[in-house]
Length: 103
Image (tube, rainbow, N blue to C red; front, side, top):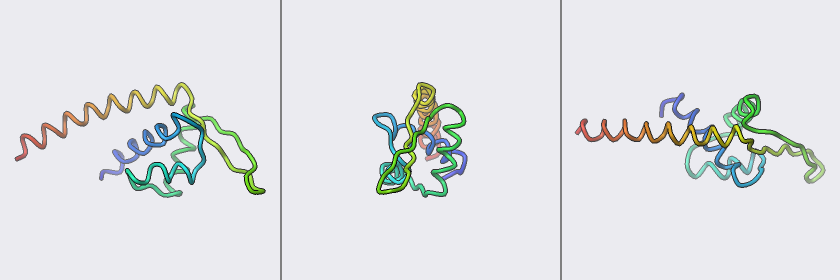
């Protein structure tokens, strides 16, 4: 899969995984990995980028004697999901054309 396309899809997947409730890195990976391959080294830069653009906020909470960082989606993040869905609808139409006309 094209790296830029995958980057956008991963950002949308991260946001969608946080839509219902806050979560932390390992859990986000567990939620997304059945659908698209993602590693810690890929996830954390995405989380940082989404936080810097205002799509996520964070808080730290102690868990088993260590601080765990929790991520929460913002209204900007919810708008980004809607934009991603619109982009995917357009992409789906393009793929349908390629598939239909390419045979």
